[in-house]
Length: 96
Image (cartoon, rainbow, N blue to C red):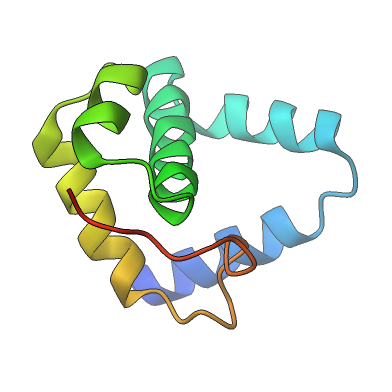
């Protein structure tokens, strides 16, 4: 029987095999509900805006999310290994 780690590894392999933005959009739209897709997209924007140094309250207002969501994103971003983060080339965040 496969474990959750096996399922996640299979998902990562599946996504890495996708070779175009259009195909990735189709794959994500088929795997996720519209709400999940929107939530993940916003989470990535939270990471991006944090790296740009945008204050937490401004991010929450801009994206229409709660301040707790932004704070959670900030904590998650802090745990990402910088060498594997697609956002690692952006400036680091500052807290408000």
